[in-house]
Length: 231
Image (cartoon, rainbow, N blue to C red; front, side, top):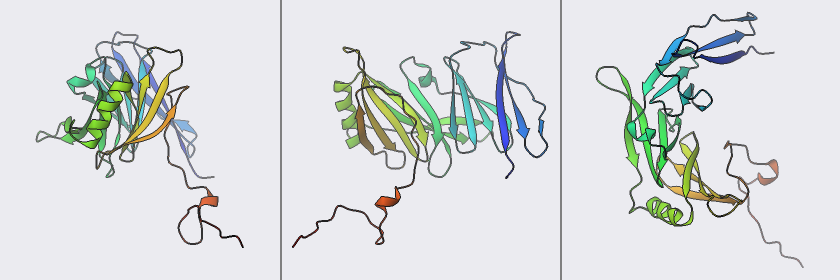
C-alpha cells in the first residue's frame, strides 16, 4: 500500500481571537504532527458559516462576512492570510476560489448577474494580492446571455472553479416551492459562457471531470450516431 496523509483542520475562538491550525497524520510514521496556531481575525464572526474551497495545491477557508481568506499550502502545510477585494463583502456577492489553466490561483465572483475574475498576484513589495483580471462586458455574447438570465431568474451563484472553468447556477426561487435552476460553465481563458442543463428540483451540485464511457470510444477515435443501410 502506498503512503498517505490525513489532514485535520481545526479552529478556536475561546480567547476572543479566531485561530486556525492543521494536524497531519502520516501513514509512514503513524503519528500526528504538532500543530502551529495561526491568528485569523480579531473577530471570530459567525462560527457556523464557514466554507472551504480547493484549487490546485491550495485549500482556502473563509468565514462569511470576514474580509480575509485563509489559505493552506498542501505542499508546505503552511497557512497564509490575504485580504479579499472589497466587492466580495457585498451581501449579494457570491464567489469561489480555484485556478486557471496554468495553475495560477483565481477567484470568480457573481453579483447582480455580472461576473468577474481576480488573480492572485505578487506586487513589487512581495505582498500577494487579489487583482481584478477581467469581467464580462455587456456587449459580448456572454454579457447578452447574462442579461437574458437576469430577466428569467433572480439569483446567480458560483458553484466551483476547476481547471480553468467556473461552474455557475441561475436560480428562480421567488414564486414557487420548486427551485428552477439552470447550470452554466464559463471558460476562464475565452470568457465564453455555455448553458449546460436545467434542474427543476435543486441547485446543489459538485462538478468533476470523468472519463468517457468505454461504449462511446470506437476504433476510429470518434463516436457518432451512424446511419445503417438495411437491405
